[in-house]
Length: 140
Image (cartoon, rainbow, N blue to C red; front, side):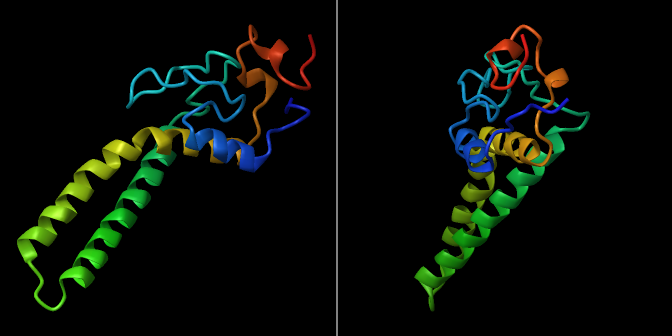
């Protein structure tokens, strides 16, 4: 059974950008920078809603990282034109290629969860029964 009041998509997005639970907005969703907890400590939403759920986060991270790499390459080329210093440009691109995926990874995880919740709103059965009483529209 789908919740009676699914979360607004813009609210899902804003919560995800803060690395909070997209469903309830609480913090503490991440155990470390690179790993989400198994469930939200507030609403109990599982971080992996279906098998292979993390593949979407990997896709988000890849797309964002390649976008940043392209921007660094284009802006670096434009800034150095006509005497392009290739070793410096390669060093900038290398730094972008290494650090962007590492820095963006937790955001890609929470963003993917938010997009997934926007497409498939959470069902009561997905939430930990200990926490469902706190959600809007849930029956005690």
